[in-house]
Image 1 (cartoon, rainbow, N blue to C red):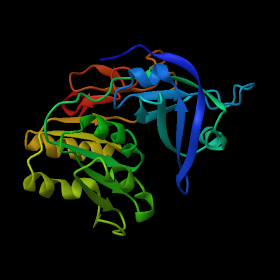
Image 2: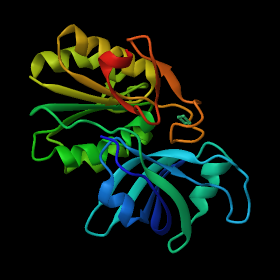
Image 3: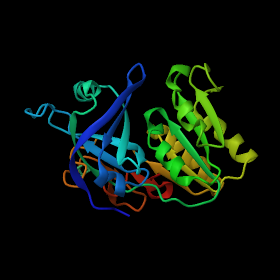
Image 4: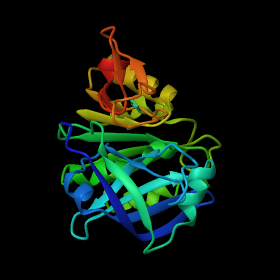
Length: 258
Ligand code: FES
């Protein structure tokens, strides 16, 4: 379901560094907090208030929502000038934010498995919370132990946490799809929610399709407008149509796009 979107001038409640180049920004945005569902994103203006440079907003997944305090959290990696400026913002400063945008996850099934890779893990925190009290398990994939700060976030939400790292410094060496077949054989999940790099989404979707477990994937794409107007984010769907990831997604049933 696509809900109305709002542009807000949000007041920053706080910002913290989670790792070398990853930050969590929390801002007060009652209109967005009230409407947001897991898997949706916000489009954040990153230029100085009196400047249009950088021109384009940045799409950031909603990582968490606190309805009691009307705050929204986003987790992002500093990758350029825009996100570098975001990282300098401090409590009580303002950000211009459009959202919530896009189609989020459909909460279905009683035994969910969440799978996240890299920064694709960010939206799974809010999803895991909304899935409770179902017994949620999560499979996290990252490059190194240092990237696995996510583990603490999910410790109090998930019944079990499975980890892979590329270098084997934490959990099993390899990538998340490597351990997935065994995990699915050991436990009886009835829904997979997946977000991360495209090759991981493809591998997970194929494994899930092979044993008939419904799977939802969240696609990551460059998004110029975020509202379906510019066509910068389209992808090919299995039915031959083209989907706009910003409005038809970012969450799709795997069979729609993979
Ligand atoms: Fe413009 Fe999707 S970002 S149409």
